[in-house]
Length: 158
Image (cartoon, rainbow, N blue to C red; front, side, top):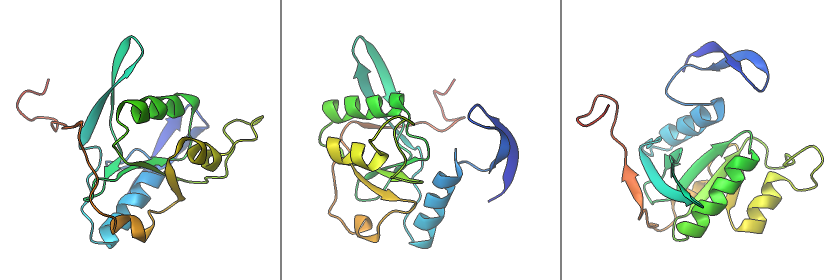
C-alpha cells in the first residue's frame, strides 16, 4: 500500500494511505483480513437510518462474512457516537463493533470517559488495532437493512 501527502483539518499535512481506504487503521484492518484469508468487504453496503426529522445513510467500513460490522476509528467524534446510537436504536439486530487505534482515548480532553467506556455503556464490542480472531469464528449474524451499494460506473450511477 502506498502513501501520499494530504492535508487534514486535524493536524495539517501528513502521510496518508493512497489506496482505497480512508485511513491507515482501515488499511491495517484490511491487511489483517487478507492475511486471515477473509474476503475484504470494504464500504460495499449502506444502511438507512433516521436522525429525527431527517434521513441519513451510514456506510459501514467492513462486514465480515458472518455479518459482523466492523467500524475502524482513530478519532471517535461526538457526531459519530450520536450516529451509532441512532443506528443501534433503529437496527438493534445488527452487530456493529469498533476497532480503535486506542480505546483508552478520552472522548474529550475534559472527559473522564474513554472510547472503551462509552462502548461498554452502550453495548458495543470493541478491540484495539486488530480484529480479535474469535470474531471471525462467531455464528452468522443478520445483515437485514443493509443495501448493496453500486460501484462507480455501474448502471444507474450518476
